[in-house]
Length: 369
Picture (tube, rainbow, N blue to C red):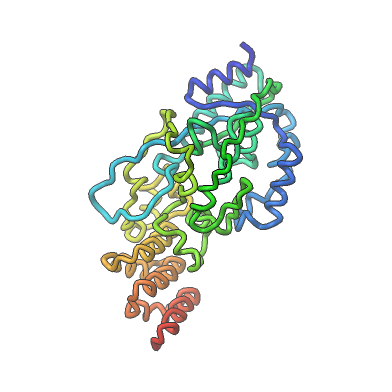
């Protein structure tokens, strides 16, 4: 067997779906991405606009690269049992029910890199960390198609696919034929998106995406988006849950093991743990990306949306948080839950952001500050 065949066989033995693609993206794909960036649809994710030439034509940076091995692991695993204790409200995107996929994939990528070197090849692996478009390479390699929900899709696994890529110096082998687009006339994902983020052309506007606001955004979540966020604590799966191709999606990658504490986190952790304790408890999970303060912010949005006064003590705890983003979010939540007595002290907060939110809410209610 040659190097390509050995790498493919090894990756498949590790449990991955595989495809080979060229290094540089087609010109029409490049222009589409540039237009998307120019329209600001990446929101505040500045890293998506950096090093555009490298992202679209990686051969400029990796002069030795001649091919890309795309790896995909299905994550349509069933939910674990809900723990019996704690305040476990809100929903978490399915991919986050397991340990951080970056850490789960990296040992396998390192193994493939070592194997490539032993075959006299150069190789460099990325798990959603480098300036590369994994989905575009997956489509180029015939692994699937981009659906109306802007996600890679294929029959059998649906949209529940976690991707990685391995740049190699191996000559590009014959690639698979393009995977046919099977969305047909279906637009359930577009109609199902709670905030109207899907544009219908295989792209989305991150400025309206729940996953962006609950994971990537660092500041306050605009009150106008709260209703659409609903009970989503981290990420959003609505466009996947309504997709017919996901009804019988399968999961077979052995590295994924859903954990109850990740699928149903205890909201009390986000208010009672210190940032250091939070880091310890959730080490090795994707919850570390937003961190304790943003998870507390998200929890307050969910608690306000659920509207159950039984959880007001937790919202009031958020009003005393050390972080002003959490306190300002708690102010909005208290206003929505009608607890204006607890809102009054926040109107005197030394942080202008917090005081401004509280005062605005109180003024609208005709309450003196």
